[in-house]
Image (cartoon, rainbow, N blue to C red):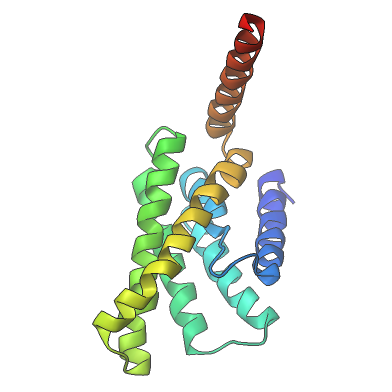
Length: 179
């Protein structure tokens, strides 16, 4: 098995294990894997990762249903869109974080207010208002997922993070010397 495939298999298992722990509602590491896969692999790998992760998790917690197919398809389509958006861009933390935030906003809009109104006959306005805290938690978790996970799947991000850490270490050393 190719080294990259093995990394994504470990990511698939790790992401679903983390989601199973339910650290807090909507704590979602998937975007940390999806963005580098969308940018650096074949067009189908990030959508497959997203779709399989959503379906696999629903299967793991015994809750496969209409919601599974909506969330899995939505994440897969977002991942496919990211492939075409990111493929010719330079990997930077700013690009990945901003992309991840936009992806989450799209995902949460579709799977929250839009689909809840359609599938459960809920009020769009009330569902949108109730979605806000959930989406805020999702946005926070995505930033952490991207900063912690994505560098292991994208060498340019790892280099950027390493430079940031070195800069912080040097600043700390210089500060201590001045004391």
